[in-house]
Length: 124
Image (cartoon, rainbow, N blue to C red; front, side, top):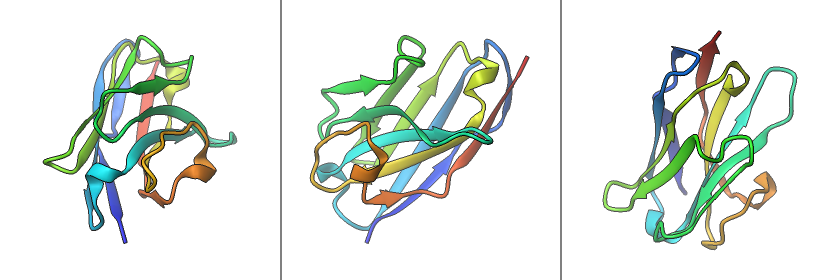
């Protein structure tokens, strides 16, 4: 069983930056594709970014492309989401997720393990 714990969410002004972290325990982290999703109040959960097992292929939602960067450190069993040029519409609970077959996906139903989420609030 894999446990995922996100951290780094906070209140930030528009135009600011944040780095979210997601630490994994249990399982074999290096074999999992990892993803970040977010859910704003009253909206469905949406894809943000995903990364392959070795970190050499990255995929982003159009809404964050050029502003967010996903990365991972397999030795530390951690995946990161660097968020720059934040906008009020980025306000959401951010979740990390692990896909155990190692295939990155933009669909939440492909992921097997989820963290509890971390709140990011961007003020205008």
